Image (tube, rainbow, N blue to C red):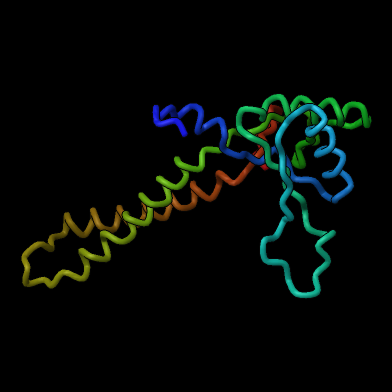
Length: 174
């Protein structure tokens, strides 16, 4: 085990979602192509907790690759889709094939969520402090209310980052 603390090696070994397939046949074809080109990959069913009696074949299947192989895997999938005679991705809003993938940054998203939760909790602590402490004022009330609003906005914005693709024509994220 290396102890040089090289973060770039650790980052490159992280998994990233390549795409989500609609069925097992499509996922199998893509996985076979990736493995034939020496790309480490794995699949995961769309639901970690499927309903009792639900048909697992109906759930989408996500394919994950290592971050270092992500771009090469995207090119292989695009080539496979062209061979099948279809575009790798189409915008559901405008139908354009000018679609690019968005890079996911889970650490940044986690930091935003933690910050927004703190911005929601701190005003709660302020409200819990008795008035006899002498901390309350109209200015502090405005700051507390502003923090609550900002915390809610940050949570909403963090939730909007769930998109994997962006259309170059209309800007729609999906």
